[in-house]
Image (cartoon, rainbow, N blue to C red; front, side):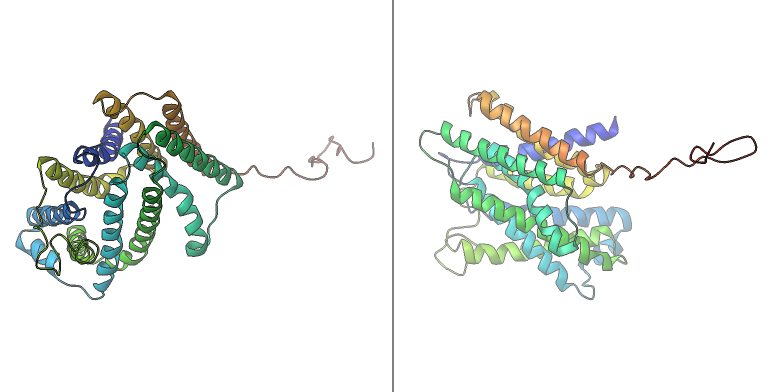
Length: 333
């Protein structure tokens, strides 16, 4: 019951986020600064974890959130990677709809598998590689079918490249944080999350100043304001960013790797149905079946990792215990 509820919340968080970004577009374009919702969401996350620290330990917990531990530079490095991933996500969503974006995110299975070879020296089984290739082909077919349904645009090549780049950055950031943050066991989870949020805000401000100089924060004095072109939909995107990050941090511990991957894949179906229900898209049986196929392949990939090789059959004659009145099957009669 409880685990199923968490699984459903996880699916909805993954599905609603691309949908609200689509909702915030005006004539298919993101008019506001693409990095501004990510910056605001990290500020909200920082305030939230400081509030939790205050609830748990009072002012002592809040002070711990702002104490700079030895080796804190690693938080800045990890925050930079995550902030860059947030920026790439918004760039990608500016070039495609939420369903295609969410489906392309499933390429993380193949990208992670390839990255694990040099980083950790681990590889996949032959069955897993075949499933990953099949999933990649299904994702490619879905993108082409979706592009064929769009009368005024072809395949969003730049958007696809941005998504794949975002997936690679996110996978690397996850591996880096998993490896580097283990040495900070002496500080609380709230303090870690606060430091991470602060570092992401700093990194996001730096990225925005360089990549989007026409809007604040910027080194240009004639740049438009930070909240320029913000609407209620943009605030919803900000809240979605925040809740998605917090759900990822607090709920993923309750789900195994198969549930996480299947949940993210099922989010594609939820987006597909949501777009039809809101009139943003029309039902396409071919695209729907390809989306379902990807979900099934992701599920098979997870199960393939649990398959254990059978122990080899014993070579030679079956041994028979020789006792009183019992003859060995291989001994002369």
